[in-house]
Length: 135
Length: 401
Ligand SMILES: C[S@@+](CC[C@H](N)C(=O)[O-])C[C@H]1O[C@@H](n2cnc3c(N)ncnc32)[C@H](O)[C@@H]1O
Image (cartoon, rainbow over all chains, first blue to last red):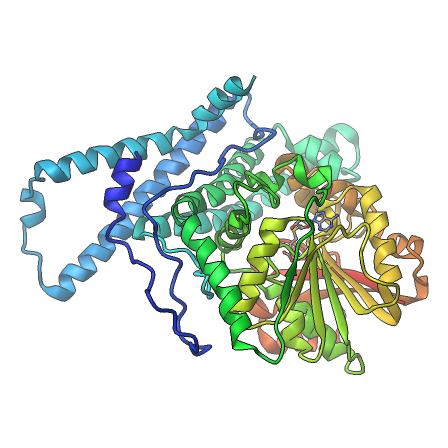
């Protein structure tokens, strides 16, 4: 997981070497920039979460469905961005997307990202595991 | 999704932004559309059922809660709301975990540059080594925020502050203003309009967290010295860097509002927002007494809060108490069961000097409606009062000393 992250995040913006001391108040602030190392935080809620349906499995399934919805939406936003860029640059020919084959390198990067995607989809089940581990 | 407007904002990938957009949209859907749907289901279905069997309408929030609990719509609303709440924080963790190192250096650099610039005035940060955080903060993850306000992972950590700031931007779906300071701007501005004679020299914000609403007091009363206190060190570190990044001179100190380290009669305004409902009743009483003590005669204590149950319909009381039952807010309902007038009186305030206001959000309603409200009081009993929904109205109460 972290390997995929580090490689895929290397294109992200680096901090500016020099900080202008007298930046104007109106200048757009630069964002705190990526560092390649992830410093994990605890993501599980102390005290657990409430369930509402007769069988908590329903709440959990609903959660998965929504996370999935979120990923579907994320893809749509990404595609929309890509399409807009392509259209602006005139870079995409008709039928090209459908005919595309990934390189082996792209393929393995995607595999790592897919794993991360699936992990996040089923994150809620992990909570029980972590609870059991603490006992 | 709302982008933070200051230098501590985190770099996010396109996908991370999209996830945040989705969660904001989901929350707006649950808290606007589904909330309306649930009321309809209640009025058309649940309440008539209750009346048929009990021969009367539910008398209070808990009765409404009990009646609606088996209802499927309530279950979907609640389950989705918990999921959305969790996803708020989950959407922040990946960019935050990746950027924690950079965030820390940026905050350190900010504090140094600002100090070097030697502005006429600058803020300060004072933490107390060995400070004891009350159990009601250190032992729970309020509103499902893992780590809570005070969780620290390393020395000089400010991750919890960043989690809160970035999370609030997703959570509020625009209703808390572009700089997350709609509460502060609406209320501090309202007080300035309503009481033109008030020229505060010193203002105190209790439980300021990341100082997002503290700054408004400085904006509205530029001549005042503004202080923010909180028990959570990582939030205060972040608050200080955030205020410096925004060019606001504010003094942040780690302090327990139940036992303030300020002399008697030293402030003209003592304010808090969204604070008392996270404190147990005993603590609230201490805080009110301390507010009274540090106020100068003629000064104003003002708490922006959720409206009290005594002033709402049974359904609206139930609706707001949802958080107490399901959002890790154990002190929320106990607070809302108290009568604000009595709280003030017991702390030593003259009952004749009690005040309460319902203030339209300046961001939602615009300057005109908002400023008119200074002369046209509104009723508390309204399903927009204190509720994060389109058309939000902020509630606050307090007293003059
Ligand atoms: C919901 S937040 C307040 C948010 C903020 N004032 C606003 O306007 O949105 C509650 C804050 O109160 C702080 N807190 C809790 N108990 C406290 C106490 N006894 N003294 C001072 N701060 C306290 C918590 O650390 C947390 O930052």
